[in-house]
Length: 107
Image 1 (cartoon, rainbow, N blue to C red):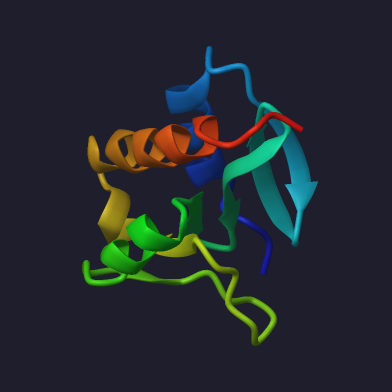
Image 2: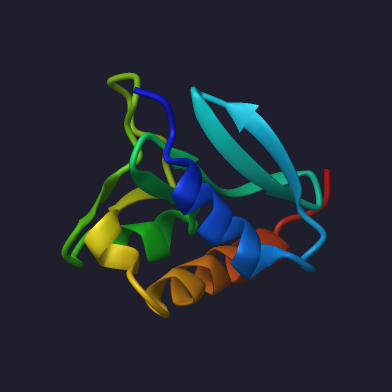
């Protein structure tokens, strides 16, 4: 199943102006900030890099699960189903990811 281009367009709309670079990865898209992966779209999921602590907390929310497409979850990442990022929730999720990624050293 290809990635959801509508979700990717929504993500791009929110993060435009953040200085990200968009790349195709893992059968979907990934947006990179300062050389670090920030977020992306995999199938019908929003994927977010939140760091281990925030990702653990996020997993307690509805429509959020570990980012696992290979049988081994990526630490610090989550996948959010469409109902979990409707409306202004998308921006809130992306801002959380941005705060974490901006705390990392540039690559």
